[in-house]
Amino acid sequence: GAGVSQTPSNKVTEKGKYVELRCDPISGHTALYWYRQSLGQGPEFLIYFQGTGAADDSGLPNDRFFAVRPEGSVSTLKIQRTERGDSAVYLCASSLTVAGDNEQFFGPGTRLTVL
Amino acid sequence: DQQVKQNSPSLSVQEGRISILNCDYTNSMFDYFLWYKKYPAEGPTFLISISSIKDKNEDGRFTVFLNKSAKHLSLHIVPSQPGDSAVYFCAARPSGAGSYQLTFGKGTKLSVIP
Image 1 (spheres, rainbow over the protein chains, first blue to last red):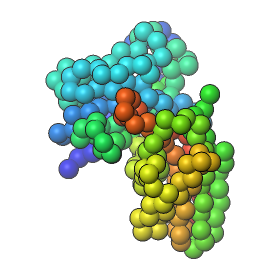
Image 2 (image 1 turned 90 degrees about the vertical axis):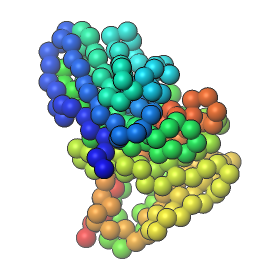
Image 3 (image 1 turned 120 degrees about the vertical axis):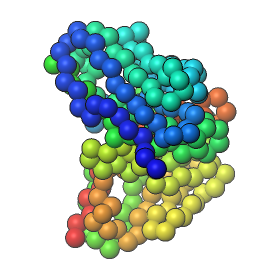
């Protein structure tokens, strides 16, 4: 079956603009995660959904960042008033459940560039 | 404050030889450790993991060793192949609350020379 997909693969925007990044998890996976990978760093946790609800958004850097998963499948990460420091690769992952040793499967990421 | 550290940004190894990638951690609450492999323009792919109750886990050419007292783990690849050239991330997660939250190192870029 298909893996985790993310669109767009690349997004270039201007400082101050609003952007939306989309994630399609593996069908049947109830848990969904967003990570951010800045240049030269490893992925950093942003937010985790179990079903439709954000169970843990402690990694979101500030209130300009918001994510939704209204039907428990596709998720959208929204960034308002983008800043140059938001430039990074945004990775989405999903797992069958959150319990135990369930592997997180990652998508290819969206590379966001804020000019 | 980096809780998972990969101190070698890069490593070059001859094809057929052993590759050893190292990882240190500081958080005593971590009890499950994973290695991910990443090719350019792709997401990280799970490679191998180890629970804190073990000191070794082997899967084909890949072996992960865990030294809990030293808070150190390593990934051994034997024999190394050119297709192993990628960035390798060490990751860790705690038990209990927040166990879904992976903490990654900065990665080590492995180059296997034919």
